[in-house]
Length: 311
Image (tube, rainbow, N blue to C red; front, side):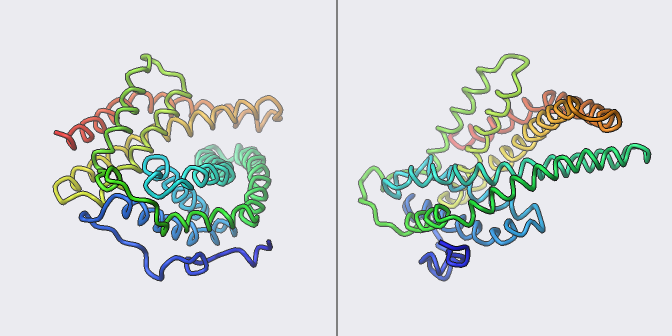
């Protein structure tokens, strides 16, 4: 299948002209389908910019849409049929390609900001350092372009679109499925993960915590559309709290990755580039320490907001 023959619009995927809507009176399955419909439209809208690479934000937003679909299918995929889990796995495949490029975009953008504050004499070495990551990013981008031009990607788009309009067998349990009550499960998992951490958690554990928080946020975004006014306001507070939580732990993870990349550079870099890499590593370790000092406060806000939903 050629790039030109891939589906590029909602209409080509058989989606309705207007996005699917669902309100508080609709059953949970309608909200799941509406969410999938919105996110696949977003994915298609950001794909051209992702391919061109003109604005890294397009790739970021395409990846966010994909992650939201994966989260919805993980939490409530059974409502839309047996095909949900295979589709979620395929979204994971595409997410790996998008994530590889996105990680380079974050690293390159941050390193450029950091070296902009360095002395003029260190700027040339800083630019050489950035060029190393730009070269790596170009290779990752070529792999992503191949993925987006593949028959596998085309099939994935078609399978997601089928889930938005399928007609699975309805059961009484599915009709009663409460998306707001369902928030208790990702909140429990996040709370359990927090309680299991030592006073000075390993970096990987904090990264895993961020992923738990992201799942809770995406579940809350889905549940918000099904909630009546009072609960919807409480869910809005939960979404904000989880977003802040993600930001703190995201800064921590970015700092960890950047510091590690600088260590790798130091193994092979010349003196000037190595000097700049060392300075950047020092800053990243300070940024890591700052995030470690504040993440528990942001978690407390998430915990309070989640508990308020069921008070």
